[in-house]
Length: 291
Image (cartoon, rainbow, N blue to C red; front, side, top):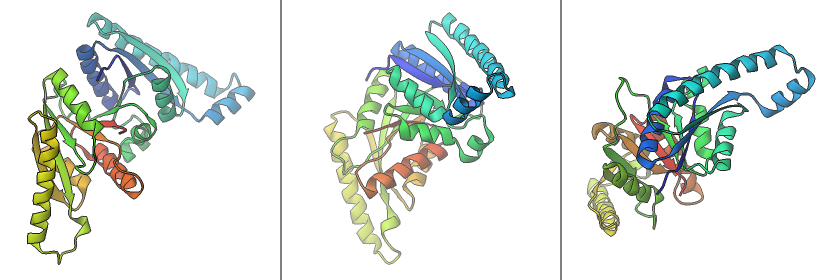
């Protein structure tokens, strides 16, 4: 893996400031440049219609004020990062945030998008980062959804967790996590979630034990194929996302690296929803890739 260019989404919230710390963390270790953007949230249709008919409207004046305000904030970030040896460029745009973020990332050939899990707006707070989830769905490059810490501290990624589907022949998230761990000197743990949802209460416990044992053997085989020592464990529960989140909480995981989905069809839909739930509820930051 190589991260030469990072796109950082900034909206002035505490989460976006924490995201900046992570962008800086990666930039320092990969010698990356950071493009910081703030997107003034407006639909393209509204912008075109309103500005065409009312170029000197109150909306126009309001947008100018917002642009000046965020340009100043991004300029301050640039000054701070420049003194620390990090190359930073700030831009203020207008449009639909998730679409603009994905477009700029593609246009600039960014290697990583870094965004806060919650935004500044009321709706984002209520939906736990609706813009972030939309970016995850649209982006073709890895997205790091950053969780704001309860207390101020430096970014530390010592323990990485990878939820693995043992039925997939390859897993880009695991490859990515291993490469990242080697660069930042972190440990990698691998889990497979055995879902109890498919079995009713009458299923014999001994039968479930046998299935879990088979899954453990399959997981161990996959991990051994990597030829590097990794901690691996089969965990089980009714809800896969809840199981992953609980494991991350109990094991003091600093970063979860996962794919957006696995197999095609209904499995793709289910695994995609699991990923989104993990992003929403995780106690730590989550790095999401498309396989």
